[in-house]
Image (cartoon, rainbow, N blue to C red; front, side, top):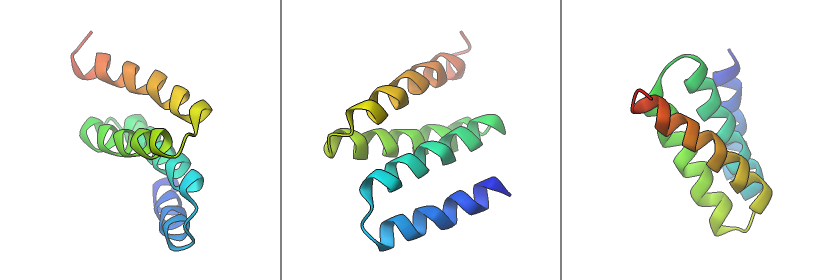
Length: 79
């Protein structure tokens, strides 16, 4: 249910050009996928969120995403 709402929010963020909202929503989508153990989908969403955050200078959000991305990378390697 949450994932469907996040996807609707992402659509609206993109429609209105809200890049911070887009990055935040992609991050939340990634976390939702992570909670349901869909690591490939989680990785893709989190990478896109990080790319947008870095490109637009959302430093605080980028740092949080990097932290979770590192955890995700460790999980995908089985560490």
